[in-house]
Length: 323
Image 1 (tube, one colour):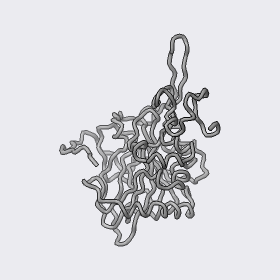
Image 2 (cartoon, one colour):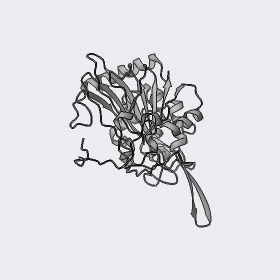
Image 3 (tube, one colour):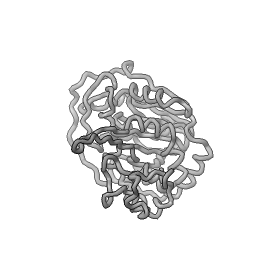
Image 4 (spheres, helix red, strand yellow):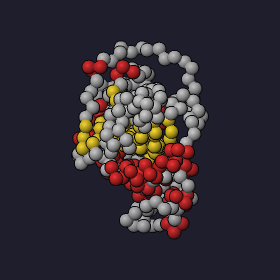
């Protein structure tokens, strides 16, 4: 994969943040109120969710994905350790993962709050209201083997050319947010075997403030637990210092409906696979208009490429309960 090469060393111009200044990282249960999770993310940028996915579901997901894990090739470059194996386009390779990990109700409820964009426009003398719903940004399974080194701390928001300003508290709008990540542990994720590390509160930092490795904490998880994180947080996979433990992680990011997806869903997932998906998963992938009229095909909803019978449907919206 082609990546931008940076040869310039960043010079620090900021007063270093101290560990005791970091906000706490909260832990929730799968039936927690989404509003509580939203409040926690505004404060720390990340949180844990206990028991997000059952052991039975995890076993089926691993069964679906294991052949793809074994078939992966070594990453070219130093962003991922060579001991990392990936299954990209995960949503198209495990239907049960699509439904129980990516479409997880708590995760999607939080994404709806942070990533939905509502706006209005004048069209002549008419005031037009429009809502752009979140869409899938990427879906990847990670298998991290023994010997892997620390991944550089980074922000996934960089893909959308963000330019964050430093703030003391989270603003009263969501304009600075472009994505939310969701990492479900398929096996125990520990500090020793490479659990995701992130810097609490770094979602409030400016673009210019570089990460401080000494501030990173590890999101240790039991199988089925999840870690949710704003894409504006500094984070990275950690070194797997064990001799025989695999860190298995099922991950995805959602983004705003009018932004380009990091992983091109329309090319990454074959059409014959998409056709077998339920409508709500197709729409989650981006086969849906971002109102007022972003993403159209032949001046129509993009789902017409999957089902031509929807062409010129008078409803203007192709929801599962209607089709």
